[in-house]
Amino acid sequence: MTEWIAIVGSGLATYLTRSLPLLVTLRPGARLRGYLDDLPIAVIAALAGAGVLAPEQRLAVGPEIAAAAVVILVARWRRNLLLAVLAGIAVVALVRALA
Amino acid sequence: MLITPFLVGVPFGILARETGLDALQTSGMSVIMFAGASQFVALELFRSGATPVVVIATTLLINLRHLLMAASMRPHFGDRPLPTRLGLAYLLTDEAFAMGSSWYRRGGRGLAYYLTFAASMWVLWNLGTIVGVLAGPAVPDPRVVGLDFAITATFIAIVVLGIRGRRDVVIALVAAVAAGLLRGMGLAVVAVVVAGALAPLVAHLFLRGEEPTPGLPTEVPG
Image 1 (cartoon, rainbow over the protein chains, first blue to last red):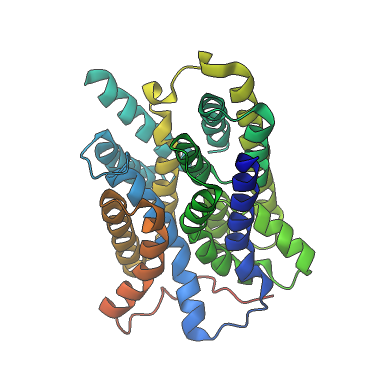
Image 2: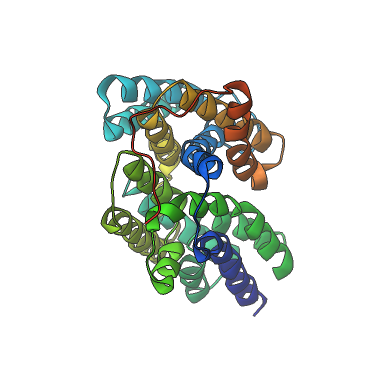
């Protein structure tokens, strides 16, 4: 039973964070619009940085750093998301296989 | 990208059963929470005997980042009726946000792209969970073939492909390094929301007067 309380409560907490900003009818001014416009790249980069620099919840120099560099290079070079991701996965797999 | 929620859902299902949740609770968690990272954290808390209050509070902290995502998606969702917006909110994951917002940044309009992607994520995440519950630990470890890096790699590529100018580079670097450091210092639960919220402000301080790259679609509500 405690598990269900935790699960449903966590579901409500999650939904609250996803829905709250959508409840308001927003007419943002120029400053806020600029900020909201900058948010996607900031939040996605933050997700990426956390995964690269601290993959196991602590700072570590692992295959993720080399793989991230490869993803950046391939993405810039070919402008192709799937190709960049596959290259990154390959680097991680390769480094782990050699280590 | 589309296959990753399935590939992460399977180990979640396995781990949840190993943690002692029954099949219904495990699947229920994926349906009710639909939040990959915090579901794994919740399992860890269950394992250490945490009370529901601790689990719920931790989930709330981890998912505060969705406030930022929802706020930035708000103008694109336009003046849809409230129930529609509430439905869209339920599907707002990191991945749906990453793909959806970059679609809008490229000048995309409407809900079809976001909805298709977000709903597919939902189906695959829940399907993966069920497969994990049924298959048990017979499934090979995705780490061996580097698949645990797929989501991070996708985020990196989305950022690189979305860079419009120097300002975006500064924002992305500040956010990535700050989030990595915060997470590495043991502040994993708030790393992304703090780094994501502050990076645009830091960039604003250092690039004072430099406007977002002109000539690109600016978002207008409605």
